[in-house]
Amino acid sequence: MHPYCVLLRPQHFVNSLYPRTKRYYLRAKSAAQAMLIASDDPEWLVFGVEPARMSALPPQGERSISTKNSIVA
Image (tube, rainbow, N blue to C red; front, side):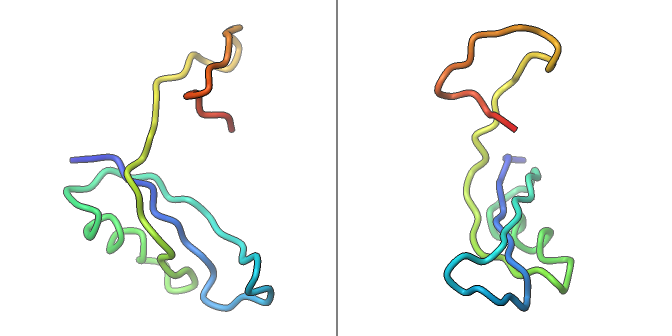
């Protein structure tokens, strides 16, 4: 199983230059399987998929020095 980030966009959107998107992080055997799992909601279309670059982060309450590879929510 590998981590993937699947990008989704709404089925119907108004502004085609800047569509609203959301990311769906999951583990799957392949990118194709990740896309199939993420496409379960008929209101959202799969826009793309990429390997997830997730790193272990300390709990939010801990002070830490951020690095360029850190994930910021």
